[in-house]
Length: 380
Image (cartoon, rainbow, N blue to C red; front, side, top):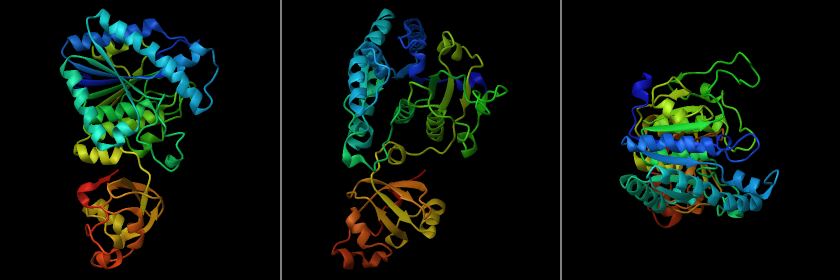
């Protein structure tokens, strides 16, 4: 896929990282943010739909209070509350200069994890784009309770950084392209901080495990890092979307990208084409419970696309309710699938290893032959 074909996108999600929204001294970089706004405005006026995922609220709040760090959840949430208004006022004023309207949307994990809220969010975002509005989205750090609520001790949250959030939004809206702007030039064949001879990888055809191993952890001040960006790229490309990771500190980088300049690393789309429901099951939900299955059950699920029957279950981990999305792990505790359960955790424990014909005898009722039916399973 050449560069011209790659950038041919109607619906675009642009993710702006913390470290490109501020200068080296920690203050907001207004010239750079306004350059993003100018480039995005040009795209919108050319008929494209653009959604902005922005970081920076916590950092701006911390700087406003004169703090060196944000140790503790409460302090981070307080800084987010202070910084979010300042951050949004910049976007609103900037887009207004070009005659465009921006809409603030703050999201928590439950906005994706609860199916009705997920569908409502999609409807709202589509309507905003239809109206020519630019949604400006950020994680709602001020009210997110995942880190402080003891009920969520064992939870795998659907997103904990804006890289994953941008991938979820791109997936939910069937975006053609996710543009991730950070303070790195793209993906290198080795860590450039440790290897001066590291070379940038221009095109990634598939985000394999080998590609994932090239990822590094977050830089100071951020919560992502190349590893989370690669996870986002793997997710979006699996759904048929394109991803570009580029350096947001390049002057007017967005305009240069859409002018066809050879910037950053392109991640090519795959052709798997999961349904919206299976995308939600596999990637957009919060996971508390797990079911461990034997080798035969794993093979039936992965290779034959079968339902999960009680006879293949060897353990039930943590508590969950009927209708929850749970994680399916193999005998080595490797998660390989997720699904919507037909029974609660207590009932699942009672029928472990049993034949489906014996469910009614053991439980006194029978909803389904399967613990999870195949239509409600997503292989990861």
